[in-house]
Image (spheres, rainbow, N blue to C red):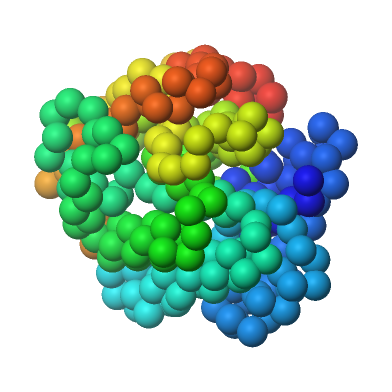
Length: 280
């Protein structure tokens, strides 16, 4: 199997690349400097030259708040037009697409768990673009894995865990919202599922993958900083206004992903392993 990764130097793309390296799996890794996914001709030329069997589409515009204003056009160009280019080019060479989506495709009003086939209703520009990206993947071919995830953290790049740890170096106490509920996702878990789906030829379609169990951002921060002297205080979303509306309750069901036989560890266990790996 010949693998290609877009966004290979991003948080998830780097994790996936390292996983392939560790398993001695050959792949082509492209970042935005190497391949502009918004350039349709360049995408088609690259895939036609390489003829990959699988395209792991990790490239994305992820500045959620900027997407509401100055980044709105770029958000759409990358997450929709770019995804369409990748999906169409992959279909033209018969390649499988693995596309990463988000819990932001839901409105956050479900007090239970969102199933993969539940009605979508994104409330911010990023979520709208990622949902449009999902549709572009579906329209291009039936050979796809759409994997929705949430609250991503990992060794590479900026994320909530690093932000909390850095704040703890200079603050005796910090405030974190306690009325948004979801599931944290370790990039290592997500990357392994992406590869697992392909190598085990699980049924094509949409999946949801985060670490098991759920929490609020306050709970997450408290666990991150449990061994520090920094006190974490809960606040409401109203006390911490942001440009982009976040889902209040976006727990996505992991049932379909688990049915493939893939083991999903809890977010607390994942966090502990991550902290040990980066020697924190």
